Length: 117
View 1: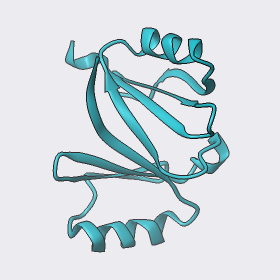
View 2: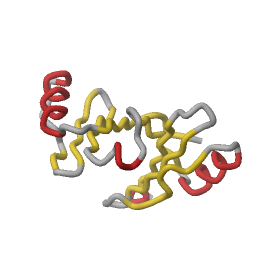
View 3: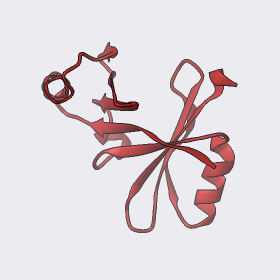
View 4: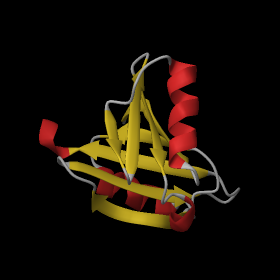
């Protein structure tokens, strides 16, 4: 079971330009602003910019499904033929992420907040 799509991550080549664009679109400043990640909150969604996304295989925005057990969810997706793009790893603060590519080439992100447990 998921808690829904709550995060979308955009791979960007020009972080400053993308930050300006999303600041104008969302009419807010980022809540996180680092050289490796910029995050905005809007209408209950996290909208993130990843300047290393293309190098990690992101070909476009990746929606992240928030799940209760990322490892079992990843195993289930791999059992359907999905391919691992990013194995489960901690990105800080107890947040685990992973991503897969389905048979049609769609990118699917998974996220688990272990700190909330």
